[in-house]
Image (cartoon, rainbow, N blue to C red; front, side, top):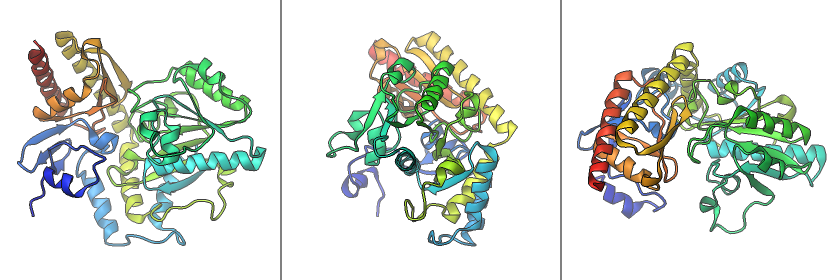
Length: 403
């Protein structure tokens, strides 16, 4: 059987429109497709492949665990899950961990937790969840409704109720919505899908203070910003604010599906036996790989290296922009970077993504106006330089075609 892009249209649900490129192998920050064409990977599986492709530490962890134990029901625990939970507790504010399979499921657990805490402590009236416009928290009906992008949540019937959206980086907007009815405020400490928007320290600290004033819990969605992505182990560590609940996924498994919700003992006690669960949550294979990825990232060499690489990326983007004037600004922290298109190129981020692919470079979009970069945290510096040369060639071709 020929496994081609055309086969996708025959056998797959058409909710995606994948590239014609079908990668078949990868090593580090390079990929090769069915025709053996090479690509430099600045996409990282959307901030997932934090150590690139086929990192030897992850291959070793997966292979060793595959020869021991693959799966158990959640009527039992297992050693890799216990080891990973202990590491997460030791290295963050958290005292308790819940494992899931994805960021959406970790966020679903967080949203159910905050509602249950509010119900138990204050009663049914304290049910409002406030999130932020242009946020993204997953694709379940609950999480996609909390995400502040109606285009993703419209068209599926009645939405979960009592969810409101404020403007990101606008404390007055939050003040207008929050009250003693608010059970939680949910936000990304660096908006990803919404355009790679960093919060001001005044905003993030103000959100924490408002939550405290109204007995509302603060939930940080660190699915994309966590596990070294910003140069901190978790983004909250560089903001001077500690959440009550944190969700993590994507880079946590280095490419193997896993998610987790982190919280305190005081809050966790409200999810008693039977209130929530996951068949695959805490899977031994996933947890073994995640522990190896987490420990590899959580070193001064890797975390400081993220900040060094951030400068290389931003310097290269500014140099390209000085020649071609296509960006209004370069945003982001660590290796979650967005190049926002100026008014002349507004709405054309997909064109940039496709042009880059033609030059052998994989990049992402963050909406129609931002080109997003989320490469491996240990991408070799030469790969950054080579990839940026390819990106410049792509932009030069776009500019020339426009005349």
